Image (tube, rainbow, N blue to C red):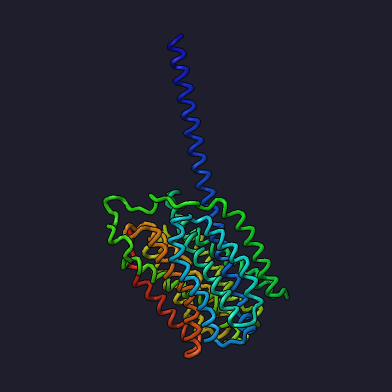
Length: 413
C-alpha cells in the first residue's frame, strides 16, 4: 500500500510537472506570437503614417507657393526632428522599454497628420513637420529594436516580413489617400480617415509591445564581449551598415517626397493622381519584402544586396530617361523592388554583430539610415533647384551602385 501511495504521489507530481511545463511552453509561445503580431502592426503603422503624407505633398507645396529649394528646406525640419529623436529614443528605450514610446509615437502621428493639410504658413508647417519627424524617428528606433529582440527569441528570420509590413502599410496609405483625393475628398478629410486607422492600430499593437528590454539580448557572449572602452565607440562596420541604409532610405525618401512633384513638374500630371508613382514603388517594395525569406534562400545574403542595388539603380536610370509618365511608373516599380531587402538584411546584421551593444548599434544605424529618408529629400530639393530633379536622381542611382561595393565590408558571421 505504501509503495502504491508512493508511486501515486510520484505520478501526480510528474503529471503536474508535465502539465505546468506544457502550460509554460504554450504561454511563452503565445506571448512571443503576440509580440510578433504587435511588431508587425507597429511596422504597418509606421509605413501608413509616413506614406499617407506622400500624396499630400504636392498640395502642400502649392498651398505654400514654395519652389523646390524652399520646400526642400521645409522638409529638412522633419529630418532634423527625426535625427534628434533617434539617439534619445535609444537611451529612453533602455529605461522605459518600447511600449510607451510606440504608444506616444502613434498618438503623435495620429494628431499631426491632419495638421499637415491645414497650415498655410511656412513657419507653422516647419513646426508641425519637426514634431512629425520626432515621432517617426523615435517610432522607427523602438520598433526596429523590438523586431531584433522578437526575431532573436523566435529563432526565425523575420526582419524581411517586419519591414514588409511597413511597406504594406505604406502601400495602403498612399493608395488609399490617392484614391480619396481622386474621388474629390479633401486632403484634410483624407488625413482624418488615416488617423482613425492609426488609432485602431495603436489599440491592437501597443498592449503587446515590449515593456522592457531584455538585458541578455543586448549583451555579447563573454568571450566576444566588447571592452568598456570600446562599448560605445562607433565601429567602422556599423558606420558602413548605416551608410548603406542611408543610401537605401535616401532613395525611398526621394520616391516618397519627390515622385509626385516629379510627375507634376516634368509631365504636367494632375496633383490628384501624382501619388501613382509612389504607389507603384510601394507595391513592388511590399512584394519584395514579403518574398525576402525565399530570395535569401535562393541567392544568399551577400548576393541579394548586390542584385537589389543593381535593380534599384536601373529603376532610377529609367526614371531619368523616361519619355512618358507611364515609363516613370515602371522605373519606380524597379526602384521599389530593388530597395525592398537592403535595409532588412542590414538591420539583421546589426542584430547579429557583437562589436557594439545592440541597442546602441541599432540606434546609431537608425539615426544614419532614417536621416537618409527624412533629411535626404531636403538635399534633393536644394540640388534640384540648381541642377534639376533628373540630374539629382542620376546621382542617387550612382550611390545605389556603390552599395554593391560597400556590401563586402558589412558582412557578419
